Length: 441
Ligand code: NAD
Ligand code: SF4
Image (tube, rainbow, N blue to C red; front, side):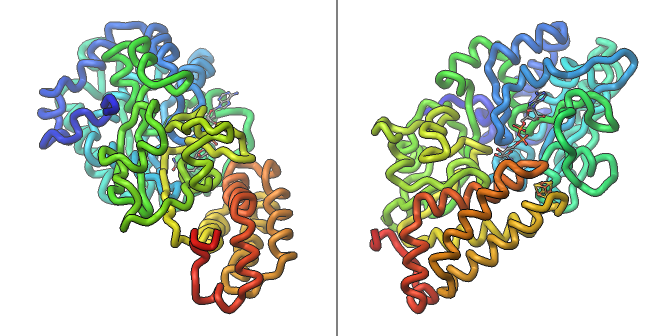
């Protein structure tokens, strides 16, 4: 059984409220942190090996150490709660059921980074959660853990909740900052990174909800103990939101030493494929990461078991492997059509492109149009090659990663399931009414 650090008290009735959270040991990490120096906290976070849980897996301690500290210029912590990646809903779970874990993590992080004004930028569609967060903020303030002169230490910190307006692109950190400043959420060119020039051109750390929540157990148990959980550079625990054709969809906390096979088939996690069907493929890290067919999902190209961690999931590179991403684990059974699935994603990215750069603005709707043609039995073999060509021209040629995120699923689908695309072309009538199942392999 995986060790629980973030969700250990998720089952406790009323844990959403301050009194219950406090009774379970809540805010003890903050009390401990406020007796430490900011440099000592940074060292703990670095030692823990914590990697950004939003999707990129960038080392959190390293990001914090990049924060510029010019004299007299305020710094900010911004929590990215704009969780919009299809298949990803772990931050929603944390904020809805454990809001004080996030607030406590933010207060520790803000103290470490020197931020007196910190923000939570939350996805607009999570319409009921800002009230939960604001209630938790008020409770923390009433208890003396937030606001002016926290616990008499002289440290001041305010936390504000800002709702997004439903644009996926505002989850990209610089688009998020633009939006937070009241502007249209267009991504900025990086560098400069937010750590140097972020919110209102001030040094800013933007971190995912889960990353900031993880700071609480790191301070509680120490960075060294946290680093002992997991394997290699995949330290600590990771939340996985599992969905698709499985028996037990939900949010699971894993310690990154379990195999993908165990995660899918054991009763502790997904409980196997629905209706006893066979596993066809999986997108293990949210819609932006490449789809993997079952054989490569369960084993690496060397025949080793694949594990639920950053290194193992990426083993084989883009040619065969995939990525941990945001931990949005989407499972497809034998009856699912990869062409239809890829078309749905392409429609999503075309709709969410901000339109700033040509390859993304023009390429994403073009890919969608071709995929729709193929799915409807109106495609040609040349369309498959054209699709390949378009995704190649998008990848790496855009301002922000949305372009790559739109290109990779198409590339991986053609790479691993080309016969399925060709079947649609060769069997136009069948393609209109039937799915190309695993049985066709
Ligand atoms: P990135 O690799 O560009 O950056 C990761 C983080 O490290 C950023 O905060 C960046 O500012 C920082 N960083 C990197 N190099 C730096 C440097 N030299 N100096 C200072 N800071 C530096 O990736 P990204 O654009 O933040 O994220 C892309 C990922 O987001 C995708 O892989 C995808 O999995 C994920 N994603 C998640 C969601 C979601 O809802 N959780 C939605 C869309 C995409
Ligand atoms: Fe906008 Fe797409 Fe360019 Fe990102 S890649 S800046 S979403 S047009």
